Amino acid sequence: MPHDFVIPEQVLQTAIALVRDDLGTAGTFNRDYEDNFGGGKGTVVNVRVPATLNARRRLLSADGTAITVDTITEDTTPVEMTHHVYSAVDVSDVQMRMDIENFARQVVAPQIRGMVEDIENFAVETMQALPESTGLAYDPTKPQLLFTQARKVLRDLGLSPNGLWAAVGTGVYAELVDASAFTDASQSGSSDALVNAEVRRVRGFNTMENNRLADDEIVFYGRDSFTLAIRAPFPPDGAAFSASEAANGFAMTWVKDYDSQVLKDRSVFQTYIGAKAMQVKRLAADGTTSLVTPALRVLTSTDPA
Image (cartoon, rainbow, N blue to C red; front, side, top):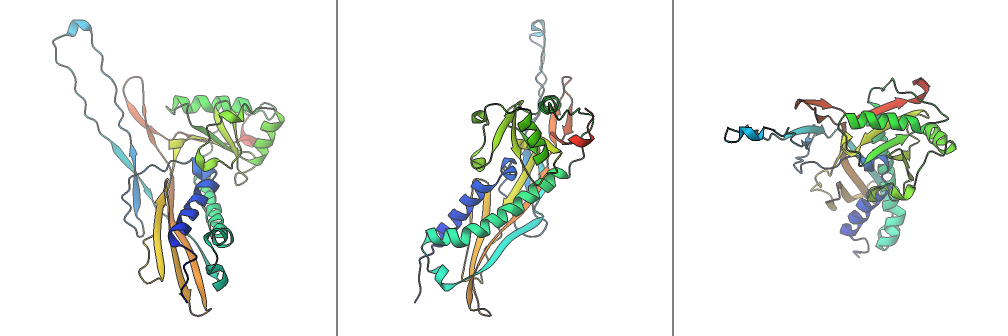
């Protein structure tokens, strides 16, 4: 007899909520890009690069002369979808007959947490692809001084003082604790995606420990320094049930089908992802612009004291 204890729409909504709440470092990446994903291999999403203009100035005595008119040109930067993240498990008849709360706990949650772990790994790998920034001094007894130096470098590159982040390895985090370098954690400004993460403040940086980084590794960045693109694959027509859902910059597809070889239903969650260190326009005082990557990757063991 058919049953409808597991409601597909609720399963997808629960899955996306789990992704949003469990992402740590990946949750700090920009996810604001054009909604023009077409699907398929090599597809890209485009991230808008805001136009940069230099204001004009003239003497009051020049009243009546022609003004200079500029043209606004907004560029886009492509971010390629490079990987297919999925979790496929066999589901027993008993599990399929559960109410949505128990199904979410016993089936959906383990699948989504596995995918979140992989997305987190992917985000950190993108960070670690940055070249090492050298020349910044590091004293393990006063680690906060490095944060002051890094803040100046990023501010000089034009990064906003709001939303600065530092992802640190466990060794650096321990040194920050020993040096009592943290300020009021209640002012961390953490996003909804980080409600369960330990976010502390150091010299204006929202600072988060990440055990995927090397012990001595720190990545300083802002919200727009990296983009994480997440798109749902098209639901397959041949499955017993398939649907896609998107919310708050996250998207995935759920497929429920029957595997006749093992006589079990199968639950498959899947998504496409891509990530990139972004280049942003920097406007100099003389009105010229240049492209810069507003992020620093530091290995404290190679920095002079």
